[in-house]
Amino acid sequence: MSDKGKVLNRLKRAIIDHDEEKAVTASKKAIESGIDAYEAMKGCNEGLKVLGQKYEKGDVFVPEILVSARTMKAAVEELKPYLKEEQGEKGVGKIVLGVVEGDIHDIGKNLVKLMLEASGYEVIDLGKDVEDREFIEALKKDRVDLVGLSALIASSMQRMESLVAKIHEECPEVDVIIGGGPVNEQYADEIGADGYADDAAAAVRLVNSLIENN
Amino acid sequence: MESNSVSRVKKALELKVPNRVPFFPMFRDLVIRISEFNFSECMHDPFRFVEAELNGMKKMGSDVAQDFSAIHVESEAIGSELDIPEKDSPSVVNPAVKDYSDLKQLSVPDPRKDGRMPKMLDIVNELKKKIGGRYPIVAYVQCPFRNAAMLRGTDRLMMDLYDYPEKLNELLKFTTEVGIRYGESLVNAGADYLFLSDPISSGNLLSAEHYKNTVFPHTKRMVESFKEQGIKTFMHVCGDTSDRLEIMSSSGVDCLSLDHQVDLDYAKEIVGDEVCLMGNVDPSRILSESIEEIEKLSKKCCSLAAENGGFILSSGCGIPAGSPVENVRTMFKVAKSWTY
Image (cartoon, rainbow over all chains, first blue to last red):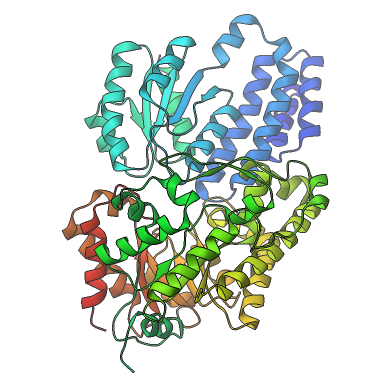
């Protein structure tokens, strides 16, 4: 393996093993050896990808994802100053998340947030019980790529339909994806959402593909 | 002796065959809605909740009466601050143990005095006065890990597993003591059973190793402490717990409340001869499906796990507030008409 390959591999491993010290050292080493910061960041992302796959298989769980996400953040902090400007723009997407109406467990939404952040996205979390107006305001305030709506109760599903229409009308450039207890793929199609994800790992894949296609 | 809900549930917990399948609806949010109360009113006035619970039991049918569940009573009494929305369940906005150095200053709350605990004792007492002897009163207690999550914040607690395993162990010892003391008070106030809840020990969130080695020893100590005093317990863990059924059962708990992701026939095979099983119609389907479908789903649960007794029909987790009353009543009808 080339020296460059070794460093990138070390970064990837550091993320998987949630070894913050190793991640920071490897990031510094990457910069010192003249590796492009963006490429190094992609190396970290490879680690997260592996973790996402492990999560889907049930080999790792939330604590591991949390500490790896933190490790990723530490590495990104090291690399960020060396990103060329256009790379900074390209590498990050901005996403708004919110629960349409309050529910008992919002851990699903929190996990999606975490996985997206760890994958390098900037996430604006509007929390739970978010009103239509708040969604629209948040989407208009920043240049947002995508919005994720979560619902757990039937009455909020009805609201989802009108909200999706409203977002498409007022912010046509923003993709809308949905998730949560009572919703499914078919419902997402029916109400004209741009996508549906069953769990956090699937949500990251969906966001990646929607943003890449934009 | 004539069979009523008290003897029915008792028999199920003893792994015997009751005269019919008992029904345990976890319908806190729904009873509040159909009684046209706001959630926050019930938080402040315990008798409102009693009224709602009794109303719900009458309208939909039940073999148990539950106190006001899952409102983080212990964590609040210790010092975590709650946000109490008008129409929704409360959440912790300011956890009590932001830093582990805070741990030293905490003391086990006095259930007669601290936080909302006295209100919960009032609820149990009032339920006992109104329907005790006819229906068993089931009171909610957080498992040690759940309470710890509401004292630290769930994300923070999850990372503590790696960052501060020893401090976490100290915190869990503390929350175990809190739960034991609170549980005893609930029983003294009239509770017949304790419902020990541990939503985040779910197989969707936490590895079986972490559950077994870090979380479970404390849960077990709590169950054992109640057992020594002759207090029977239910245990609820959300999500898919298939990989930890044997661990949970080894606590000596009397009933495992299983979420819809667990196959009841699998659970019956693995632990059905040592612990009563309860479950597990998918709550989101109770919300959205037709009566016919709910009847089918409820019958399926009974056909998988009711045989030879030791089974209570329920939802997998909390029934959503917007669910049709008729769907819950249908579950009750299935429980009533099921023949062993």
